[in-house]
Image (spheres, one colour):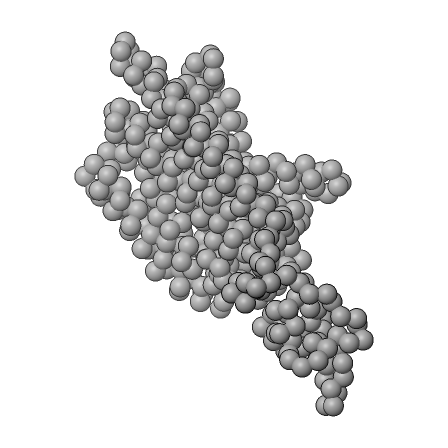
Length: 445
């Protein structure tokens, strides 16, 4: 565990320290695209954060290769080299897209090639645990197609959810933490060496996300871009492929030991766990494809219908929307982890149901914003105060002697009108902290 923690810390430190210089490089290189109609940020922000994350990945693998116990992973398996090869290719495609905006089909082809490179070096699904059947061996073509499909789906799921500051990095960090605990327990507690590469991948992925988050939290100073989102999606998929398609308890143990392993790792859990860690991004991906196809658009056409956009539309703030997505990711990932440890415990099911109810209340909170009584309105934030009747338009805006406009209908400035719930006229200073000619539209990246 100490070596895993050391690898995680070094990966996080390298990623964090390199993100600042990478930001300056992105500004000089002109990797600051104009704000698009679907963006939520209001100022051009540099991309290419994936450069720092990739070097963090390289540093983590390099350090692990020189540690006493983790060095065995590199000696007994070619999976770390396969991961590095696929990651380098997908990272290069992402860098080109962040700078030149390459076509979506070209990116899809690059993702499939990166997955094929990993398959050629041994990171592939050899068998598949099927509920009610057991472990089913796959042919070479079946394993290759399933591996490529899982890599492409995971990459695009993570890429789709990267729409708010700190959202993708935080959700993947939460998922990789749950996956690390799951893989480590299989490897260390039950001696299944085939789970060691997946454990290493999860530790490095946590370090990459933790090192990048301080620069990416709202308001973000830099975005990871496709070079980062596709990279962490590929690493997440690599860990899922390794532990799902490489670990076969049937061939490792027999008798009572085999029964003990199946009590801890039911046949369906290795198949379920990789799906739970990308449950929310995958759901967002499926909904986006259905929505765009229903409208007659391309599945790759960008829009403002993602889950995080819906949260903003209901009335959640940027930070609260991100925290809600964090909550649901943690609930699904760690709920599956707890169920894999003790699937017979009713307390786990009740706990998940209770937390789900809390999550739904938090999700719908803007729809049921409470209003404080009149005597307590001075002691609560403006959003909890009762709104007064809106004055007629003639009395809301009056012309001052200097030709300016006052939005209060009397004395006071725009800020007072905003706090009382009255409309603020365009062009009034201090409205949302700025002077605007017209209504400022919300845009998202």
